[in-house]
Image 1 (tube, rainbow, N blue to C red):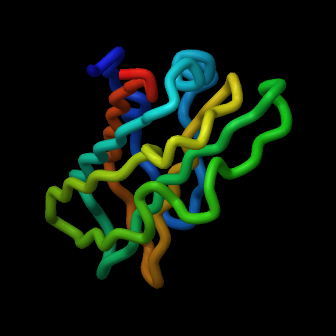
Image 2 (tube, rainbow, N blue to C red):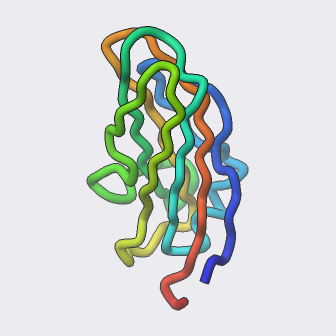
Length: 128
């Protein structure tokens, strides 16, 4: 059963920048062990194409962060100028989260590219 759903990130990301979801949500994400992610990338500007990656990080103290898994939850997905793209991923591997969780978001590409990124989180618990 879905326990919670909300917009985790809603902003523009520029090429080769690493941004993180707000500290406002770190405890909320850490409560449940299954985290579904959906990203909508629109208003893609620049030249050429790039890739989008989202990876969850977790922490015991909210200061020292480690990737939750080796592979990103949404790994290196293609984006192109002038398109609207949606991708899905998540953490449903039954590994427990530490109490604080955040998302790292990156757009990379050979050319200058930026996109409006809206990342949704859907939270479930292993006990469900």
